[in-house]
Length: 103
Image (cartoon, rainbow, N blue to C red; front, side, top):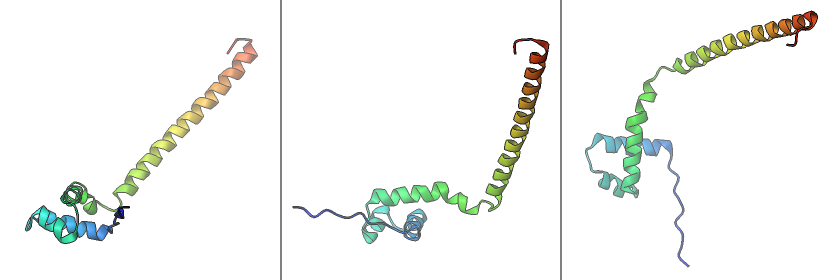
């Protein structure tokens, strides 16, 4: 029975190092893959991910907090509006019953 290869789990640091080496372009993808015993397609995938998502490293740390705060303000405003509409509806239903009108 053939022995099945176990999947290797690589750390984020290792992936970054390999992807950075590939992005620098001093050596070919195949050379880097052979040195680290990886498939060239894996090295290429990590390189693409580094180049596309690398800008996230330099985003402001509080930018996400700012987005969360804006979303919370928007949610609060919607909740206030909804509460006001519910109170108005209850008031109108009560008045309709007092006047004998079908709500």
